Every structure is written in structure tokens, then in C-alpha cells.
Image (cartoon, rainbow, N blue to C red; front, top):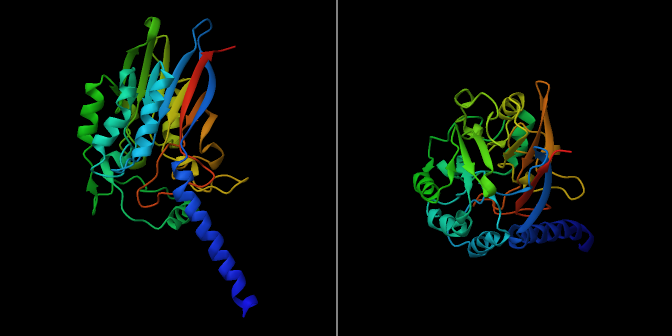
Length: 309
């Protein structure tokens, strides 16, 4: 009897322990990554850029709020928010409170699908099935049927009131310390086909000190367009770094058409004879219905942009 039931009971116990760790510890084990990217013009002073992404705030997540507030102590030159701030229609006040200290600094943002629509319960195994089928998440269609409208307008108004630059299919400039002129080009979320690259095409600014591209989901069509136009650096989020990864192996899915080798962190993207640096944030949250992370702790990233060699 012991031999008959011992193995399945052992597997169940290991699975339960792993789930408890992934939901109870790692999903709340926030950390900061530091990355250097040699992209600035020769002679420029280094620029400290804090990227926050995929907060997926649910009302009551006090530890996440306090950690985000603490990031203001880094005193970055610039904050870039790459979307999916919400996972709860009631979460807007908490997001604005958590990011309030960071909104003292110059900033810019794009939205992701979860800023517009509330999540629905979903079998996590579908992500693996969709990868096999060559599909990606919402397959480019807004979740109209049964979707919960998130109050993204309130979030937008809060960011705008703080002076953060809205990069929804548009271009803009920020003046940073010492008069550094930063040009930014952003897209709305390709995951639900809200991106309109034709509206922002034309490449980096000819007059700014540096140009940066921003998008929520790193779909190849967006990366190809930015890279072909000559942007030296693209920032994105969306992937959660794979969220549930296999130790010593890595991510199984990216929830878009980006390969798993570039699911998070700094890499490069080549297209049309050009090469760009790509930084994908693993983000600091998760869908409220799958609040787990395994071998992929929640994060924000401080990117130090340095002069090219």
C-alpha cells in the first residue's frame, strides 16, 4: 500500500510546495536589476533610466505599493512605464499612490491590454497550447465579449497631471538634467492591435540628444519597424519574463511572437540592416487569477545609458 500511493503523494506534496513558494514567496520577492547600455553619443554624461512594467495592481497589495514607492530613492533621471498597471478596476488609486514618489521625476508611459480591459479566469495551459498553434494570447483582438472595462482614463489623467509623457502612438520630447533633450516614440499595445506605426514613422529625431522607442508588448512587427528606422534602444514589457520558468532552463512562453531567449533583460534585435538594443522588463506583477512566479522574480530595472565606445 505504501509503495502504491507513496510516489503520487510525493509528487502532489512537491507540487503543492512549489505552488506555495511561487505564490506566497517569489511573487512578492521584489528586486531591482541594474543594466548598462552603451547607446549615448560620445561624450554624453550617463543617463539613469528606471523602467517599471506590468504592475498588475490588485487592491490591497501593500507590499508592492511600498516597494514601488521606495524606488524613488534611486533618484533616476527618467522613469519609463511600459504598461499593464492594472489587474483590478479598483486598483487605480493604489497605482497612482505607489508611483506617486516616482512621478516627481520626468517620465513617459504606454498602456498595455490590461490597462484597458480587466482579466478573466483562464487556464494557464492555454499559453503553451497557443505557442504550439502559433497563436499569442488575445491573437490581436480586443476581448470585447464579457470584458471588464478598466478605468484607464483615470490612470492616464493621473500620469498626465504629473507631467509624464503619454506615448500612445505618438512622439514627444522631455528635457532632462543639464538640458539633455530626449526624444521618445511610443506605440499603443500590439497585443490587441492598437499599434499604429504609420503615425510615428520617420526614425529618431534629428535635433534631440538621444531618441528612445517604447512599446508594451515586444511583437516582432513593432521591433522590426523601430529597428529599421534606426532607434538605438527599444523598451518593452508584457512577457513577465515567462512568469513560470524551469530552473536552469528558462521560459516556456513569451505570450507574443518574440523568442524565449529574449523573454527578459537586455538583448539585440536586427532588421533591415540595422541593429537595436532591446530591453524587456520581466515586470513586477501577475494577472490576479494566476498570482504566481517561479524562477522569475518580480522586478524593476535601472538602466544606465552610457556613451558608445
